[in-house]
Image 1 (cartoon, one colour):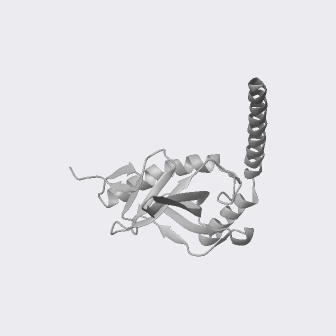
Image 2 (tube, rainbow, N blue to C red):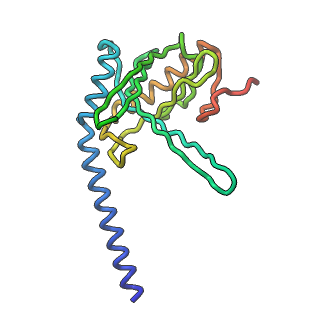
Image 3 (tube, helix red, strand yellow):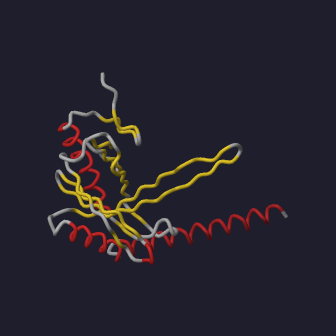
Length: 197
């Protein structure tokens, strides 16, 4: 009798895996030229007056742990961005998905004049920007593929070429800003400043 349950359980798991794989594959195909990807491109073109910026979709997740006594509470906050980047400059546009439409408000353009430090690692897919006083400005992470998994992952976007360009850009921008301000970073998320030797 136990063997029968193992077989049924194995079949159910296989079906679930196949269904998940098919959904993910379809979402990735939709993301190659998706409306969301076009919208990110259009936002960057609009806010930069078509000034030759590459466009990419970025996110960040902050996990906060709190509570008291025997109770532990975790809360995750999700941030979404349209990002434009080109040599020496990065444009960060916070996105909102209220009502199913992609909207945006404030736009920030960062360069070595207004960014005091860039923390990241060359070839990696994340960076942190800090102002001239060492206060955090923004954290970004880009992915090769973003799929509509749930309400916290609201887009289908494939961005392989953009991803590779952005990872290259991180190293160049980090080097330019940090050498301009004579700072050394750790490459560790949330702990940017390397100790002076």
